Length: 62
Image 1 (cartoon, one colour):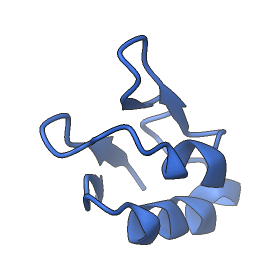
Image 2 (tube, rainbow, N blue to C red):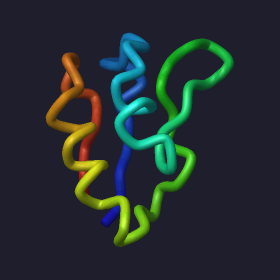
Image 3 (cartoon, rainbow, N blue to C red):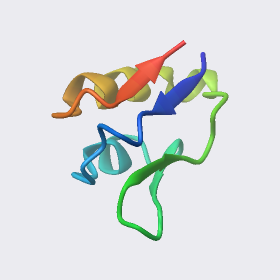
Image 4 (cartoon, rainbow, N blue to C red):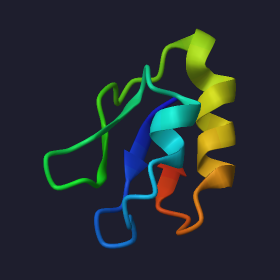
């Protein structure tokens, strides 16, 4: 699974970073970035929860 954050939609709520810190991080600008684009199998469920929890729907899974 691959994951991406839409920079235009992200508003820096940070829910993804709390939900799955193995994959998401906050950049210097305070917005989410993907630290691990190729999601480890053990983190896939957490990434799905992060995507569903994003209030801006800025996370996409491929």
